[in-house]
Length: 274
Image (cartoon, rainbow, N blue to C red; front, side):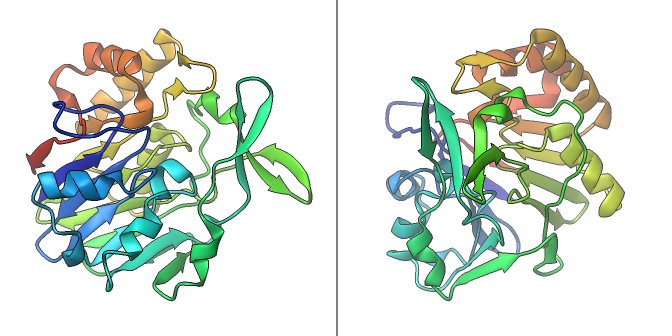
């Protein structure tokens, strides 16, 4: 399995452009897929530098309805003519965020795109084939990210806290590997891992994604004590973790202190084989 980071907040060198967003290219035995497409068309530029042909991509998974994970959809549709795009059925909702200065800003997906017949609206779960499976509806609330308090949905003309029912996760099964990919883990990475074990009856060998331990609006991380407790939990799962994006560098360092060699950081331009 080959994984290349097309977009992330940071880069391994100045050769690659960066933005607040996430896009991963994942090549399995059967698929060439994108997990998220960043905030813009930047992933296309970085894909060329990493020798990824976007025209060959056969599936796109959008983790949730935020622009920094699905803002590049229009650019993708302009380049690739075949891939199905799998989004949760609520991902095109009215999704907002509190911003500094008392501003409430729309941070959702481009609703004009939903008419495209290549979109597949996913419910609580979907098995694409024997390699790929999607799940959402994570109900646990352990270590629920405090940054979620600034993330909203508009319902009945009123702003209410987002419950992240539009967030979905990907499980890739290949040989003895069970790879869990989570875009931002708004539902909490511990809850997502536990949901996979309880509902799918299997535990991940590898976990990839942002863990939302940094509140971008407030400009601060979760408390060091909370992050270290999460790190202890993750370490005990014995899986290997690769994190990025909304985890935040400070929180990543705290996790690394606890998890030793069980966690690494993925930046734009990184390439790895599992």
